[in-house]
Length: 195
Image 1 (spheres, rainbow, N blue to C red):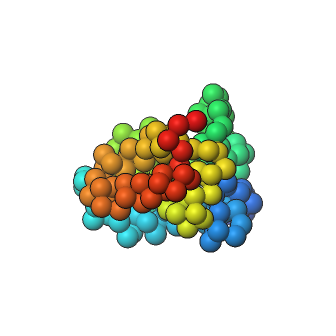
Image 2: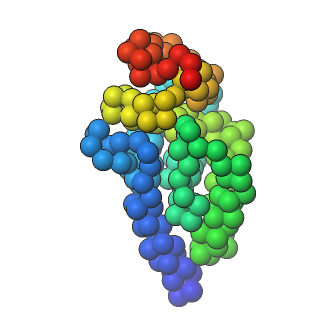
């Protein structure tokens, strides 16, 4: 009974992720929440795997995608552009330990290890999960006419720095789709040339 209670407590606690709102807009109408972001990332992972240059265990990447932002229940969301947060990794690690400690020991260890693997971004599965994270953020800017690029007056150097990961691991997608879209937003002045 103790194991079931721990699992139920965890599932109730993570429902709070629906109330963590990001800077990106959903359908150009309202701020997207972390649950929507993770779901959309999972769909990106299922859809774009053929472009990833390494072999990947998709199930493991999907697990990382589903848990990667749960820690924001305690640590909060940090926008990609315009916000400095020097203690972010420390704060998020503490939040991960706190959140996953609700689970039975075997699941606590598995979820914490998956979260750390995503953050360290050294395995193929973590790289692919991070590709999906960055692509989803890029895509949200396209569907909101550059909302966060406008809001934080993002420069092309900043945006390219963020999507460089995509250039490395999904180069065909980067060259054929991402870079041409970025050039359109630069030409319109939404992505700034310089600050």
